[in-house]
Length: 246
Image (cartoon, rainbow, N blue to C red; front, side, top):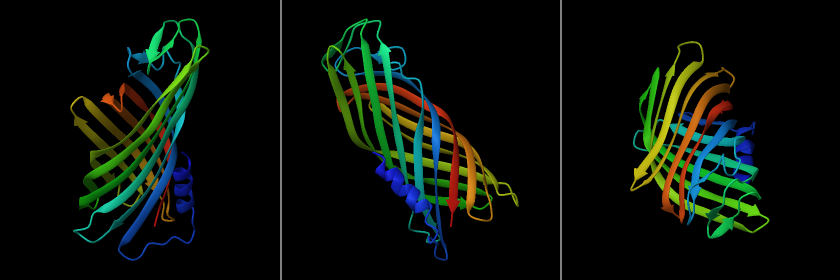
């Protein structure tokens, strides 16, 4: 689960990486301080991830690497990897069923949540001066698992789905300062399934490739019997990113 993140770090810290004329390479990584809330269900009633399972706040990892160029008909590209995982342990106050397994009141349930999101984004920049606008398509693979374990039994439910999302981003640069403000949205909604992630950010990029970015990011996920799983989950919080540009 961590290999893609380690690969991104290696690429971003390679000192011999240089962009050709007319090509810009950028990348970054950050730890995302999230609060995890909502409900999940698999063949039973809704289970609250905070009140029933005991999930709360956790640090998540995000890495990205992109390429922009001056050829009008060819889109720019970005790859982003989000490693979202957490563990919890809670004495449950009620009996519930998940994936055919009953978890009895007044017993301890240990839970593990692990979700990898791998994005490939192709986008055009119809505006690219003091204000930059990106419009394109994100193809996202969700690969994850929720595991529940108690003295009475254990079970797990996996998801492996690939979805297309609309991608829109905007950034405004403050002249001669290296400071910018921006926002990004990736979203899809079909039938009773919906996935949206967005962020708002302010950042600074020096003349020596290095930059810093402070922002708030939110991921909302609604699943209706997707891979046998129902979910209404929210994950959001602030982040501080280190970025590089060539």
